Image (cartoon, rainbow, N blue to C red; front, side):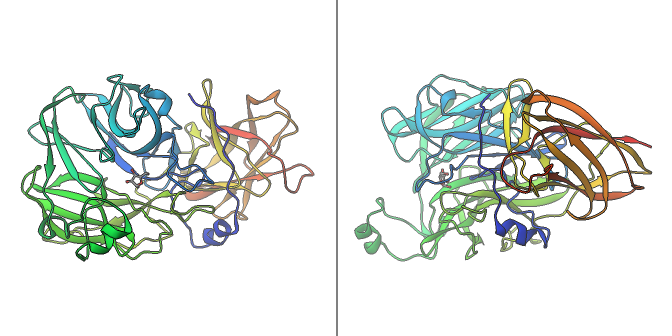
Amino acid sequence: MIHRNLKYIALPFLLATTAVFAQNPVVQTHFTPDPAPMVYKNKLYVYTGDDQPGFDFYTMTKWRVHSTEDMVNWTDHGVPISLESFNWARDRAWAAQCIERNGKFYWYICAQTVDNNMAIGVAVSDSPVGPFKDALGKPLISTGTWDNIDPTVFIDDDGQAYLYWGNSKLFYAKLNKDMISYAGKITEITQSAESFGGLRRPGRSDEVLQKQEKFDDVYVEGPWLYKRNNQYYMMYAGMTGKTECLSYATSESPTGPWKYQGKIMTDQPTNSFTNHGGIIDFKGKSYLFYHTGLLPNGGSYGRSTAVEEFKYNADGSIPKIKMTREGVSSVGTLDPYKRNEAETMAWSEKCSTLENKKNGVFVSDTRVGGFIKVRAVDFGTGAAEFSASVAAGIDGGILEVHLDEVKGPKIAAVDIPRTGGWEDFKTISSKISEKVSGVHDVYFVFQGKNITAGRKLFNFDYWSFKKK
Ligand code: FUB
C-alpha cells in the first residue's frame, strides 16, 4: 500500500460550480487522467493514471482505481499499482486498461523502461481493486520503440482476446488464453483517410508537421476497442487543429479493415491538449469517459476523469457528445444503514484521501468549511442515529450532517476529540435531531472548534445510520 499525502483542493472554481450540481470531474481529491472503465458484477470501475500537480510533462508514477454502483457516488480504492510494482519500469506510468477473465483481473499498463523506451506490461489480481502483481516480471510488449503506449484489451465472444496499442502507429497482437502472452506476430494496422480520417507522417518536428498533408483527423493514440451488435468499434484520440479530440472507426472484424466514422468529442473547452476515453454500457445506459484539465490547478498535465451519458443512433453510430459540468444522473440509491466508506463521494471540497495498511483508504486533510457530498441516500421510513469512524491527532473538530444542501437542515453533529493519533480511528455517534425519511443528498460538513481556517481537522474512515 502506498501512503500519500495529497494537497487538498479548495478553490473558487469548485465553490462556484457546486451551485449547478457539478459532478464532472468525478474525482476531486486528486488528478485521474486516461480513464478506462470496466464493469464487473454490479459495479463500474474506472482505472486511471495519476497526474502530479506542478509538472509540465506527463510525469506520472502510479495508477488509481475508483468504483461506483450508481454513477454518481464514487469510491476511492487508492493506488493498487505504481512504477514500483514493475521492476523493469523507471518512469511514465501512462494509460492503462483492466479486464476480467475467469475471475482474474489483468491490468495492462505502459511505462518507460530502464533502456529508455516505452513498453507494455500486465499486472494480475484476484480482485478488481487488487492487490495486483506484475504477472511476468518483464514487459509483455517491448520492441525498443516509443510507440508502445496506451494498451486497450478486448475479449471477443469466441474467447479470442486482442491487445491494441500505439502512438501514431496502431498495433495489435492476439493474446493467448492466459492473457499474459501472445500468439503470432505483432501486426501494424495500415492507416489511411478512409480508416482513421487521415495519415500522419512519422515524426513530430515542426518541419515534418508543415509538410504534412492536411487532414481533418488522424489517429494519434489512446485506442479503445469494444463490440456492440456484431460491430467492432475503435475509439481513439484524433486531432482537431492542435488539440486532441475523440474519434472512432468501425469494422466487421476485430482486426479491421477499419472505416472512419468521425469525431465523437471535439472542440470542447476541456483545458487539456490530450483527450483519452473509454466507452461502456452499465445498467442499461451507455457512457463516454474522457478527461479534462478543469480541476483547479489542472490543465494538460493535470487531467481528471469526466463522464457523459449518450444514446447510440439507430444505425449504431455514436452521436457528437459535449462535455458538461453536471455529468450523469444517478442509476441507484445509497443505503445509509450499511457501513459506507467516507471516500465514497459525489463531490468534495477541502479534503483529500490517504491510505494505510490497516484502514485502507480514508478521507484526510479535512479543513474548515469543506465537505463531502453523497447523492441519492435512501433513508426509507426514518433514521435515529448517525455514527462515524474518525481520528484526530490534536483537538479534532465537528462533523456535521446536512440534508440536500451544504447549508441545508442539520440532522446530526459528531464532536471529535483527540483520538490518540491521526490514524487512531474511534467510532462516535450522534442522535438524529430532525425527522429524516425518503431520498436525500447528504453533506458531511467539516467544522473546527474555535478554528476558522488553516490546519487539518480530522480524518474520516466510514459512516452509517441506525434505523428508527
Ligand atoms: O497520460 C499520458 C499519455 O497522455 C497517455 O498515455 C496518452 O493517451 C495521453 O493521454
